[in-house]
Length: 426
Ligand SMILES: Cc1cc2nc3c(=O)[nH]c(=O)nc-3n(C[C@H](O)[C@H](O)[C@H](O)COP(=O)(O)OP(=O)(O)OC[C@H]3O[C@@H](n4cnc5c(N)ncnc54)[C@H](O)[C@@H]3O)c2cc1C
Image (cartoon, rainbow, N blue to C red):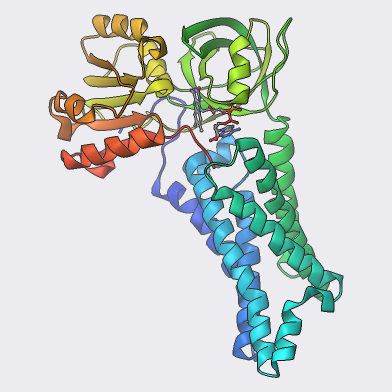
């Protein structure tokens, strides 16, 4: 494997780092609180509460958006996946806690069991625990709704963070000694503050300015960004979070959104190609030179582990951005077929440039096709020579990637040879 400059290699240790962190925190908490001499239900209540608390704190740490941490955890997408898994498992364990307490009460009488589940019968620390569970439930439920508008999803998801703090407050108020909370409480507060201040408010972002603006397709803008301070080392295939500010006539939405770089200049400039897909990316279409931008990153490893074997690249729509960045960086090292699918001629961003690049580089074969319905994958893949021996890189909408993966598998491409980038984080 040859890694692209500036992108670290993902080792098995990186892949295991996130689950190991979750496991260590959960197991460490349970070991400290191990309930010797308690009956089964009470022991279950204690073990589930501490395992859930450890997992929750770990899940919060995995929410921090920082390039070195993301590299340590094998990429931001892998990190977020474990953040989500840890949060869901923690919630399930924390739900067991009051149920197990009720189970212990049931051994005395149903009335005692019911009392364990009725927060109004207790004092404020117990209320705090129930408030934490309800907030967590709302925050987690939002992550399962694919159709929720992004901003509403994010606002609801923030409630999960408040739920964690309420839950840890519940434990702190009930315990005579803090035990693992000495670690869990500051770690959770630090993770929330780091995420909110460093990433969402952008205190850790670098200042850039829009140098020039072009429109490579309908409802798409490409901006070349120049650094106003230390530049970021970005490799083609990586993405940055960009928040556009103000210019002479333009007022930015100032939210950080992920965009794959479409070009990396020797002078430290970066290009991003942005398709109008929602409120902020539509507003950005009116971008002008001179607008201030704040960038976080770089993140991602797409195109980083390019084997020496021949390549097949497949791009759908704006998923062309990582490939145009790689092609703009210089001639290809290995024979590559690029399949580029777009809805219609007006959506075919960079098509002329791609045709010129393919004409100049004998290693590159371009198969560009307009498809407004189901993509003609069977036909296109049938035209790729020695398909089964190629390393495949896919970037585009999730349905296209799913269809391409099953068609590739049916044609004998091993799953390990298929890499893909989704333009979605939830
Ligand atoms: C790794 C990655 C690389 C991307 N690269 C490109 C690119 O090169 N060019 C391009 O046009 N688009 C790219 N996108 C998609 C782009 O980020 C969204 O289209 C944009 O954020 C939409 O914001 P909006 O307010 O216009 O629309 P919304 O309606 O708010 O969002 C539409 C969808 O975009 C996603 N999204 C929105 N905001 C964020 C956010 N802050 N963080 C994560 N996901 C978000 C959500 O899935 C959401 O459902 C990429 C996305 C990801 C995850």
